[in-house]
Length: 346
Ligand SMILES: [Cu+2]
Image 1 (tube, rainbow, N blue to C red):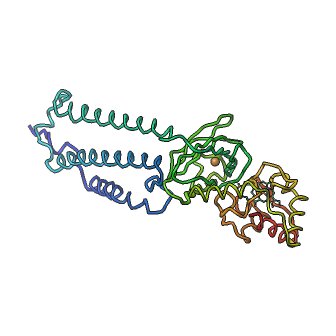
Image 2 (image 1 turned 180 degrees about the vertical axis):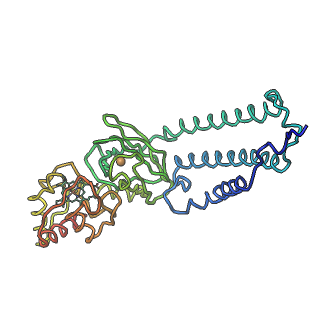
Protein backbone atom coordinates (compact mmCIF):
# COMPACT_ATOMS: atom_id res chain seq x y z
CA UNK A 1 0.00 0.00 0.00
CA UNK A 2 3.00 2.36 -0.24
CA UNK A 3 1.43 4.23 -3.12
CA UNK A 4 1.62 7.99 -2.68
CA UNK A 5 -1.19 10.11 -3.93
CA UNK A 6 -2.48 13.53 -3.27
CA UNK A 7 -0.47 16.50 -2.24
CA UNK A 8 3.07 15.48 -3.02
CA UNK A 9 2.22 14.57 -6.64
CA UNK A 10 0.69 17.94 -7.38
CA UNK A 11 3.08 20.68 -8.47
CA UNK A 12 2.75 23.37 -5.85
CA UNK A 13 3.20 27.05 -6.63
CA UNK A 14 6.70 28.04 -5.65
CA UNK A 15 8.63 31.25 -5.16
CA UNK A 16 9.01 32.09 -8.90
CA UNK A 17 5.23 32.40 -9.28
CA UNK A 18 4.99 34.78 -6.35
CA UNK A 19 7.78 36.94 -7.78
CA UNK A 20 5.94 36.93 -11.11
CA UNK A 21 2.81 38.25 -9.44
CA UNK A 22 4.75 40.94 -7.65
CA UNK A 23 6.22 42.09 -10.97
CA UNK A 24 2.82 42.21 -12.68
CA UNK A 25 1.32 44.21 -9.81
CA UNK A 26 4.27 46.62 -9.80
CA UNK A 27 3.92 47.25 -13.56
CA UNK A 28 0.20 47.96 -13.18
CA UNK A 29 0.96 50.33 -10.32
CA UNK A 30 3.49 52.31 -12.34
CA UNK A 31 1.46 52.68 -15.54
CA UNK A 32 -0.30 55.93 -14.60
CA UNK A 33 3.04 57.46 -13.63
CA UNK A 34 4.25 56.99 -17.21
CA UNK A 35 1.61 59.40 -18.54
CA UNK A 36 3.30 62.61 -17.50
CA UNK A 37 1.60 65.97 -17.70
CA UNK A 38 1.99 68.01 -20.87
CA UNK A 39 2.86 65.14 -23.18
CA UNK A 40 0.79 64.78 -26.36
CA UNK A 41 -1.35 62.11 -24.77
CA UNK A 42 -4.98 61.17 -25.23
CA UNK A 43 -5.07 61.08 -21.42
CA UNK A 44 -4.45 64.84 -21.44
CA UNK A 45 -7.33 65.66 -23.78
CA UNK A 46 -7.94 69.25 -24.90
CA UNK A 47 -10.97 68.86 -27.10
CA UNK A 48 -14.37 67.10 -27.11
CA UNK A 49 -13.21 64.28 -29.43
CA UNK A 50 -10.24 63.21 -27.34
CA UNK A 51 -12.22 63.81 -24.12
CA UNK A 52 -14.70 61.17 -25.23
CA UNK A 53 -11.87 58.71 -25.94
CA UNK A 54 -10.26 59.54 -22.63
CA UNK A 55 -13.39 58.82 -20.59
CA UNK A 56 -13.92 55.51 -22.37
CA UNK A 57 -10.25 54.65 -21.76
CA UNK A 58 -10.55 55.29 -18.04
CA UNK A 59 -13.83 53.40 -17.81
CA UNK A 60 -12.25 50.38 -19.53
CA UNK A 61 -9.18 50.63 -17.33
CA UNK A 62 -11.23 50.60 -14.13
CA UNK A 63 -13.41 47.74 -15.31
CA UNK A 64 -10.23 45.79 -16.07
CA UNK A 65 -8.69 46.69 -12.73
CA UNK A 66 -11.75 45.47 -10.84
CA UNK A 67 -11.98 42.27 -12.92
CA UNK A 68 -8.26 41.65 -12.46
CA UNK A 69 -8.48 42.28 -8.71
CA UNK A 70 -11.38 39.86 -8.34
CA UNK A 71 -9.63 37.14 -10.34
CA UNK A 72 -6.36 37.67 -8.48
CA UNK A 73 -8.31 37.56 -5.22
CA UNK A 74 -9.64 34.12 -6.08
CA UNK A 75 -6.21 32.99 -7.16
CA UNK A 76 -4.56 34.18 -3.96
CA UNK A 77 -7.36 32.58 -1.97
CA UNK A 78 -6.67 29.30 -3.78
CA UNK A 79 -2.95 29.51 -3.09
CA UNK A 80 -3.38 30.31 0.56
CA UNK A 81 -6.04 27.73 1.21
CA UNK A 82 -4.16 25.12 -0.77
CA UNK A 83 -5.73 22.05 -2.23
CA UNK A 84 -7.64 19.55 -0.27
CA UNK A 85 -6.11 16.13 -0.79
CA UNK A 86 -9.47 14.55 -1.54
CA UNK A 87 -10.19 17.17 -4.24
CA UNK A 88 -7.29 15.88 -6.31
CA UNK A 89 -8.98 12.60 -6.92
CA UNK A 90 -12.13 14.38 -8.06
CA UNK A 91 -11.56 14.89 -11.79
CA UNK A 92 -15.19 15.46 -12.74
CA UNK A 93 -15.78 18.51 -14.88
CA UNK A 94 -17.53 21.27 -12.94
CA UNK A 95 -19.19 23.11 -15.85
CA UNK A 96 -22.61 22.99 -14.37
CA UNK A 97 -21.78 24.64 -11.06
CA UNK A 98 -23.66 27.93 -10.59
CA UNK A 99 -20.48 29.73 -9.53
CA UNK A 100 -18.74 28.88 -12.80
CA UNK A 101 -21.74 29.75 -14.96
CA UNK A 102 -22.30 33.10 -13.26
CA UNK A 103 -18.72 34.27 -12.62
CA UNK A 104 -17.14 32.65 -15.66
CA UNK A 105 -19.78 33.16 -18.35
CA UNK A 106 -22.63 35.50 -17.49
CA UNK A 107 -20.74 38.32 -15.76
CA UNK A 108 -17.93 38.50 -18.38
CA UNK A 109 -20.51 38.39 -21.20
CA UNK A 110 -22.49 41.26 -19.67
CA UNK A 111 -19.36 43.37 -19.09
CA UNK A 112 -17.91 42.76 -22.57
CA UNK A 113 -21.23 43.45 -24.29
CA UNK A 114 -21.66 46.70 -22.37
CA UNK A 115 -18.13 47.85 -23.20
CA UNK A 116 -18.65 46.92 -26.86
CA UNK A 117 -21.89 48.92 -26.98
CA UNK A 118 -20.18 51.93 -25.39
CA UNK A 119 -17.34 51.71 -27.94
CA UNK A 120 -19.82 51.64 -30.81
CA UNK A 121 -21.64 54.62 -29.34
CA UNK A 122 -18.41 56.60 -29.07
CA UNK A 123 -17.21 55.59 -32.53
CA UNK A 124 -20.47 56.88 -34.00
CA UNK A 125 -20.23 60.08 -31.96
CA UNK A 126 -16.62 60.64 -33.06
CA UNK A 127 -17.55 60.43 -36.73
CA UNK A 128 -19.33 63.79 -36.68
CA UNK A 129 -18.94 66.89 -34.54
CA UNK A 130 -21.90 68.01 -32.41
CA UNK A 131 -22.39 71.20 -34.42
CA UNK A 132 -21.67 71.72 -38.10
CA UNK A 133 -18.02 72.52 -38.88
CA UNK A 134 -17.20 76.15 -39.59
CA UNK A 135 -14.59 75.47 -42.26
CA UNK A 136 -12.66 72.77 -44.11
CA UNK A 137 -8.91 72.22 -44.10
CA UNK A 138 -7.44 69.84 -46.66
CA UNK A 139 -4.47 67.83 -45.45
CA UNK A 140 -2.15 65.90 -47.74
CA UNK A 141 0.34 63.42 -46.29
CA UNK A 142 3.75 63.25 -47.98
CA UNK A 143 6.92 61.31 -47.24
CA UNK A 144 7.64 62.82 -44.61
CA UNK A 145 5.71 66.01 -44.01
CA UNK A 146 2.15 67.35 -44.00
CA UNK A 147 0.67 69.83 -46.42
CA UNK A 148 -2.28 71.94 -45.21
CA UNK A 149 -4.54 73.72 -47.70
CA UNK A 150 -7.14 76.36 -46.93
CA UNK A 151 -9.82 77.95 -49.11
CA UNK A 152 -9.64 75.13 -51.66
CA UNK A 153 -5.87 75.48 -52.10
CA UNK A 154 -5.61 79.30 -52.22
CA UNK A 155 -3.51 79.16 -49.07
CA UNK A 156 -0.95 76.40 -48.58
CA UNK A 157 1.30 75.73 -45.62
CA UNK A 158 3.13 72.80 -44.08
CA UNK A 159 3.36 70.99 -40.75
CA UNK A 160 1.63 73.78 -38.83
CA UNK A 161 -2.13 73.60 -39.05
CA UNK A 162 -3.87 76.67 -37.72
CA UNK A 163 -7.54 76.65 -36.80
CA UNK A 164 -9.98 78.59 -34.66
CA UNK A 165 -10.42 77.26 -31.10
CA UNK A 166 -13.83 76.44 -29.61
CA UNK A 167 -15.46 75.29 -32.84
CA UNK A 168 -15.23 72.12 -34.94
CA UNK A 169 -13.25 72.21 -38.16
CA UNK A 170 -13.70 69.66 -40.92
CA UNK A 171 -10.50 67.97 -42.09
CA UNK A 172 -10.24 66.23 -45.47
CA UNK A 173 -7.34 63.85 -45.67
CA UNK A 174 -5.49 62.27 -48.52
CA UNK A 175 -1.93 61.30 -49.43
CA UNK A 176 0.47 62.02 -52.23
CA UNK A 177 2.30 58.71 -51.85
CA UNK A 178 1.78 55.95 -49.28
CA UNK A 179 -0.49 55.34 -46.30
CA UNK A 180 -0.05 57.77 -43.43
CA UNK A 181 -2.23 58.34 -40.40
CA UNK A 182 -3.17 61.75 -39.08
CA UNK A 183 -3.20 61.79 -35.28
CA UNK A 184 -3.47 64.64 -32.79
CA UNK A 185 -3.78 62.63 -29.55
CA UNK A 186 -5.05 65.55 -27.46
CA UNK A 187 -7.84 66.38 -29.92
CA UNK A 188 -9.09 63.40 -31.94
CA UNK A 189 -8.77 59.76 -32.92
CA UNK A 190 -6.45 58.74 -35.77
CA UNK A 191 -7.57 58.92 -39.40
CA UNK A 192 -5.60 57.18 -42.15
CA UNK A 193 -4.66 58.88 -45.39
CA UNK A 194 -5.20 56.42 -48.22
CA UNK A 195 -3.93 56.81 -51.81
CA UNK A 196 -6.74 57.72 -54.20
CA UNK A 197 -9.24 58.36 -51.41
CA UNK A 198 -10.38 61.33 -49.38
CA UNK A 199 -11.08 60.49 -45.76
CA UNK A 200 -12.53 63.00 -43.41
CA UNK A 201 -12.49 63.76 -39.73
CA UNK A 202 -12.89 66.87 -37.60
CA UNK A 203 -10.85 68.68 -35.01
CA UNK A 204 -11.94 70.85 -32.15
CA UNK A 205 -9.79 72.38 -29.43
CA UNK A 206 -11.46 73.77 -26.31
CA UNK A 207 -8.92 76.54 -25.93
CA UNK A 208 -6.19 78.23 -27.96
CA UNK A 209 -2.98 76.21 -27.78
CA UNK A 210 -0.38 74.23 -29.65
CA UNK A 211 -1.09 70.52 -29.97
CA UNK A 212 1.48 68.09 -31.29
CA UNK A 213 0.44 65.59 -33.92
CA UNK A 214 2.24 62.61 -35.36
CA UNK A 215 2.01 60.27 -38.34
CA UNK A 216 0.67 57.06 -36.82
CA UNK A 217 1.05 54.64 -39.73
CA UNK A 218 4.52 53.37 -40.62
CA UNK A 219 5.31 55.08 -43.93
CA UNK A 220 9.06 54.61 -44.42
CA UNK A 221 12.42 55.69 -43.16
CA UNK A 222 11.46 59.01 -41.56
CA UNK A 223 8.02 57.99 -40.29
CA UNK A 224 9.02 58.89 -36.73
CA UNK A 225 10.07 62.36 -37.91
CA UNK A 226 6.73 63.14 -39.50
CA UNK A 227 5.27 65.31 -36.78
CA UNK A 228 3.14 68.44 -37.04
CA UNK A 229 1.44 70.97 -34.83
CA UNK A 230 -2.15 72.04 -34.66
CA UNK A 231 -2.24 75.67 -33.58
CA UNK A 232 -5.67 76.60 -32.23
CA UNK A 233 -6.22 80.35 -32.03
CA UNK A 234 -8.96 82.71 -30.97
CA UNK A 235 -11.19 83.30 -34.01
CA UNK A 236 -9.77 86.85 -34.39
CA UNK A 237 -6.16 85.67 -34.29
CA UNK A 238 -7.01 82.92 -36.72
CA UNK A 239 -8.60 85.33 -39.18
CA UNK A 240 -5.51 87.55 -38.94
CA UNK A 241 -3.27 84.53 -39.58
CA UNK A 242 -5.35 83.48 -42.58
CA UNK A 243 -5.19 87.00 -43.96
CA UNK A 244 -1.39 87.04 -43.64
CA UNK A 245 -1.04 83.65 -45.25
CA UNK A 246 -3.17 84.72 -48.19
CA UNK A 247 -0.60 87.39 -49.08
CA UNK A 248 2.14 86.64 -51.59
CA UNK A 249 5.67 86.34 -50.22
CA UNK A 250 7.55 89.29 -48.84
CA UNK A 251 9.80 90.69 -51.57
CA UNK A 252 13.45 90.91 -50.41
CA UNK A 253 14.75 94.39 -49.67
CA UNK A 254 18.29 93.87 -48.36
CA UNK A 255 20.94 93.23 -51.02
CA UNK A 256 21.90 89.90 -49.50
CA UNK A 257 18.30 88.65 -49.37
CA UNK A 258 17.83 89.76 -52.97
CA UNK A 259 20.90 87.76 -53.95
CA UNK A 260 19.43 84.84 -51.98
CA UNK A 261 16.24 85.00 -53.99
CA UNK A 262 18.41 84.72 -57.11
CA UNK A 263 20.09 81.63 -55.67
CA UNK A 264 16.71 80.10 -54.85
CA UNK A 265 15.24 80.71 -58.28
CA UNK A 266 18.35 79.68 -60.21
CA UNK A 267 19.27 76.53 -58.32
CA UNK A 268 17.36 73.30 -57.78
CA UNK A 269 15.19 74.75 -54.97
CA UNK A 270 12.58 76.22 -57.29
CA UNK A 271 12.17 72.82 -58.97
CA UNK A 272 10.55 71.48 -55.80
CA UNK A 273 9.23 74.41 -53.77
CA UNK A 274 6.72 77.19 -54.35
CA UNK A 275 7.07 80.76 -53.14
CA UNK A 276 3.94 82.71 -54.00
CA UNK A 277 4.71 85.84 -55.98
CA UNK A 278 7.86 84.42 -57.58
CA UNK A 279 8.49 82.07 -60.51
CA UNK A 280 8.78 79.14 -58.07
CA UNK A 281 5.54 77.15 -58.21
CA UNK A 282 6.59 73.53 -57.73
CA UNK A 283 4.83 71.35 -55.17
CA UNK A 284 7.21 68.47 -54.48
CA UNK A 285 8.24 69.96 -51.13
CA UNK A 286 6.55 72.29 -48.62
CA UNK A 287 5.30 75.68 -49.79
CA UNK A 288 7.82 78.22 -48.48
CA UNK A 289 5.82 81.44 -49.06
CA UNK A 290 5.53 82.09 -45.32
CA UNK A 291 8.30 79.81 -44.08
CA UNK A 292 9.52 82.28 -41.46
CA UNK A 293 6.09 82.31 -39.79
CA UNK A 294 6.49 78.64 -38.81
CA UNK A 295 8.08 77.60 -35.51
CA UNK A 296 9.65 74.40 -36.78
CA UNK A 297 10.96 73.00 -40.06
CA UNK A 298 11.20 69.51 -41.52
CA UNK A 299 7.95 68.26 -39.95
CA UNK A 300 8.56 69.29 -36.36
CA UNK A 301 12.13 67.97 -36.33
CA UNK A 302 14.05 71.26 -36.03
CA UNK A 303 13.39 74.67 -34.56
CA UNK A 304 13.08 77.25 -37.28
CA UNK A 305 16.25 79.26 -36.68
CA UNK A 306 19.17 80.41 -38.78
CA UNK A 307 21.56 77.68 -37.79
CA UNK A 308 19.07 74.88 -38.49
CA UNK A 309 18.01 76.43 -41.80
CA UNK A 310 21.64 76.60 -42.92
CA UNK A 311 22.25 73.00 -41.98
CA UNK A 312 19.01 71.65 -43.37
CA UNK A 313 19.24 73.52 -46.68
CA UNK A 314 22.84 72.53 -47.37
CA UNK A 315 22.65 68.95 -46.09
CA UNK A 316 19.11 67.73 -45.30
CA UNK A 317 20.28 64.12 -45.40
CA UNK A 318 22.44 64.49 -42.31
CA UNK A 319 19.43 65.68 -40.30
CA UNK A 320 16.67 63.62 -41.88
CA UNK A 321 18.27 60.73 -43.77
CA UNK A 322 16.17 59.65 -46.73
CA UNK A 323 14.20 62.93 -46.92
CA UNK A 324 13.02 63.69 -50.46
CA UNK A 325 15.31 66.74 -50.61
CA UNK A 326 18.84 66.39 -51.97
CA UNK A 327 21.88 68.18 -50.57
CA UNK A 328 22.78 71.32 -52.55
CA UNK A 329 26.32 72.45 -53.29
CA UNK A 330 26.46 76.14 -52.43
CA UNK A 331 29.34 78.48 -51.61
CA UNK A 332 29.15 79.80 -48.09
CA UNK A 333 28.28 83.23 -49.52
CA UNK A 334 25.39 81.75 -51.52
CA UNK A 335 24.18 79.82 -48.49
CA UNK A 336 24.22 82.93 -46.27
CA UNK A 337 22.31 84.91 -48.90
CA UNK A 338 19.81 82.10 -49.40
CA UNK A 339 19.13 81.87 -45.66
CA UNK A 340 18.83 85.68 -45.47
CA UNK A 341 16.14 85.37 -48.10
CA UNK A 342 14.34 82.46 -46.40
CA UNK A 343 14.41 84.19 -43.01
CA UNK A 344 12.43 87.18 -44.27
CA UNK A 345 9.60 85.08 -45.74
CA UNK A 346 7.24 86.03 -42.93
CU1 LIG B 1 3.65 59.08 -42.50
